[in-house]
Length: 192
Image (cartoon, rainbow, N blue to C red; front, top):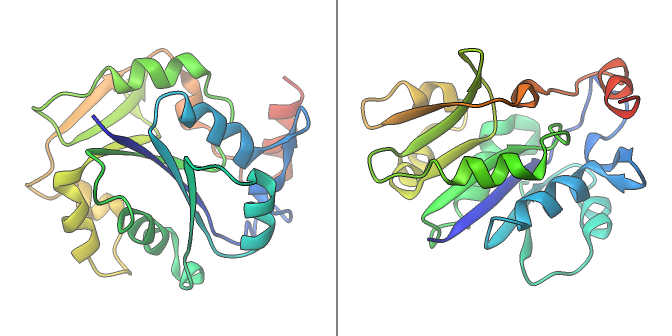
């Protein structure tokens, strides 16, 4: 089973007033932290860049298991970056779609998450206390559906389509809600 990690690192990080992918925790950038965790369970990691693409690529360095995809339309929203990344993952059975602002999920989360894969589902999403979070595992049967959607659409719209067969995995990780939008959010992470 081939799984590709897909990290979005294209946006402007406007509310943060700092570029999120390059914020550091214990001397590593957020993009490095997440890439290293995904490489534990993924065959490859696709990083979608846009704003500051050269700095993101320099932060990771060369690796035959990491590829960078530039989204020239990054200012038009996250869905354009998801589509750009999925377009390069056509030979993957699953994509683990991950945000750059969820660095606190422990390595064991990812091992447990991929164990949820089943032929009965094409969308697997973690939930904590019955509230859905991220990241999300997407099966290749959904790739073309997402790619065919208008760029102004969203993954939420896709999630409501009849073709989507969801498994909501009840997990013990509140970090599935992590969303670093402000300096205060980030401050809480680095003070832990």
